[in-house]
Length: 406
Ligand code: PMP
Ligand code: GLU
Image (cartoon, rainbow, N blue to C red; front, side, top):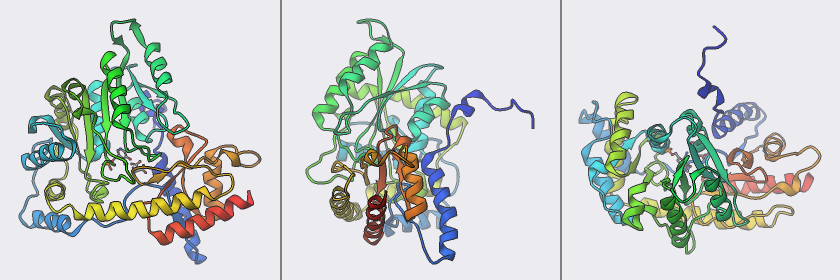
C-alpha cells in the first residue's frame, strides 16, 4: 500500500471505546473459559432482554409476506405514521410524516445530521460526560467538538456553557456564531442523569438566542426511575420545535439493538437534506426490521414497563452496593441503565486514570466496565446494569473485593 492513502478526517477518528472493550473482553473470556472462569460484563450498554415475541413474530411474517424489497430510503409510510403518533402520544409534539426520517439506528441518524449541518471547522457543543460517538461523528464531518464541563451533580455547568458560546460568537449580540449544533442527551448515557423541564427550557432559550440547532437524543426516554419525568425540548414552543432535531430509536425501548432502526423528527427542510444523504449512501434501513419496528410502536407496550421495573430494581441494588464501597462515590441515576461512580480516590501508584482502573479490574477481577475517560470524565467509570441480577451481585462482589485490595 502507499503510505498517504487515507483522508485526514478518518485518521483523526478514534475507535469506539465500547466496541474495543467488548473485543478485549471477548478475547479474555475465551482464555478464562478454559480455566472454568468467566467475565462479568458491565461494558457495552444494551438490554439483556430478548425482543418481545409480538415484534419478532411480525418480523418473521414480513419475510413470509415477501416484504423484502427496497423501500423509500427514509422508511415506509406506515412506520412514519406510527412515529408521528408516537411523538404526539408520548412527547406531545405535533408532526407530519414529512417531518420524519427512519435510519439504521439512532447512531446512523445522528451521523446524517452531522453531515447535513457541519462545514469544516464548525463548532458542535457537547456537554461532558458524553456518549462516545458524538465527538467522533463531528470529527468525521470535519467539525470541531467543544466540550462543556459538568457540575457535581453530573449536569451541565451553565456558566461554562455560556463561556464556550461566547468564545465562538463572531459579533456580540448578533447571534452570528461558529457554533452550529448543541447535543443534549436526557436520560443520559453514561450518567443516568435526567434533566428537568426548567433546566431544558433554560438551555433551549440560550440555543435560540445564539442560533444554535439542538440535537435532542432521547433514546432512553422510557427508562425513568423514582419520580423522574422525561420532557422533550421540541414540545416547549414552536420556536424550539423549529431548531430541534429529536432523535430516538426502537433499540433500547424494545430491546431491538440488532434490528438497527432509529428515527428522528425535525423541520421538513432538515429532513429533505438528510434524505439526500440516505438516498446516496445507505438507501432504506432493513425492510423487515421496519415492519417489526411498526409493531413495536403500535403494538402492546406492556413489555416496556416489565423491563423498566426490572432496571429500577437493579438500579436500587447496585446503587446501594456501590455507595457502601469505601472510596467509591456515586449519584443515584434517575434514568437509562448506567451508573457512573467516581473512582479517582483509587488513583495513585499503579492506577493513574480511569483506563488503568478499568484495565486492572478486567485483568485482576474479571469485570468489564467502561473507563470514564472515554466519555470525557476521567475520574469515573461506567457500569451498565442491563444484565441479570445474578451477574450484578457477582460483579459487585468482585468490585468490592478489588477495591479493598488496591
Ligand atoms: N445515543 C445514545 C445516547 C446511545 O447510548 C446509543 C446506544 N449506542 C445510541 C444513541 C445509538 O443507538 P442505536 O443502537 O439505535 O444506534
Ligand atoms: N449505547 C451503547 C453503549 O454506550 C452501545 C455501544 C455503542 O454504540 O457505542 O455502550
